[in-house]
Image: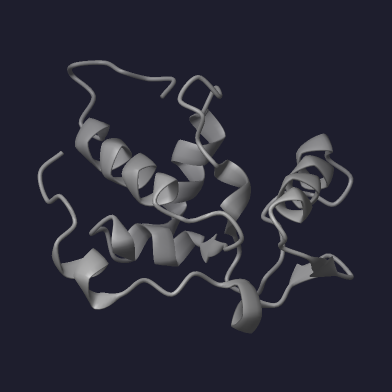
Length: 122
């Protein structure tokens, strides 16, 4: 993670979000809201976006697996990360049609054990 300050009030939340993102398996995607829920932060989708935006790549975070709930990329279509996200997802077998991923086919469905027994205090 980019920011690892001891006095950072959001540090624990960031750690939970990073853990949730890392749990998304290859070949699947999750929405920002879904990641927030898995991290135990309902309605924390904006914080998920913030954490992803601050990521510097040092923790090998599979950022490409987090997309909007409607199956679209959360970045502008003309940005280099938009193109990179779909290219990375394609290497994992996640295909987009007209810039949209079929969420019924590729959305990761967490099981009840994952939600109930995830680490609570990271």
